[in-house]
Image 1 (cartoon, one colour):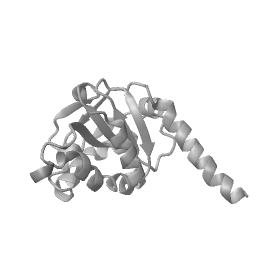
Image 2 (cartoon, helix red, strand yellow; image 1 turned 45 degrees about the vertical axis):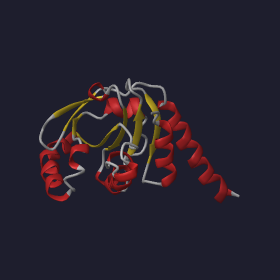
Image 3 (tube, one colour; image 1 turned 90 degrees about the horizontal axis):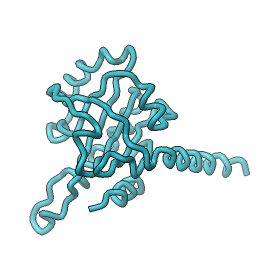
Amino acid sequence: MNKLILPLLFVLTTTITDAQVIGKMFPGMEAETVEDKKVNLPTDTKGKYTLLGLAYSKKSEDELNSWFGPVYNKFIKKATGLMAGMGYDVNVYFVPMFTGVNAAATGTAKKKALKNIDTQLLPYILFYKGELKTYKEALDFEKRDIPYFFVLDKEGKIVYATSGGFTEDKLGEVEDSIED
């Protein structure tokens, strides 16, 4: 009996946590591209739906990376042939967050990204350097070692939230939350 209760409690906790941020405005965040161009979230993304993936620990990196290919193929890659013009008009950003003593590693991380990440993905990766407290509180970051994902509407309000590694179900929920 206890074996069934624990997974159910985890699912309920995750759902309740995600629901706590739905309807809130995404807190302002200044991040940078690998070329040091500043992007202000959600201000610079208004007018389009936006999918954000945020991670603030090295351990969450693999789960964040598990989203790159599927999200690229679903929302970024330009359709050709019969499918041309059938894509999504959505902003997508993956944001590693460098906070506290780790903030000094931002430059090194950018250089590593330039070297190791597919150039087609680089425009969709932003680097945040600063404090974490505002985001932990506003976005209900409970677990340090998992990434968090948010879909923002055209005004910057959170309409969907999830966390952890990629699954087809989560991608379907992201897709359902983006209105054309």
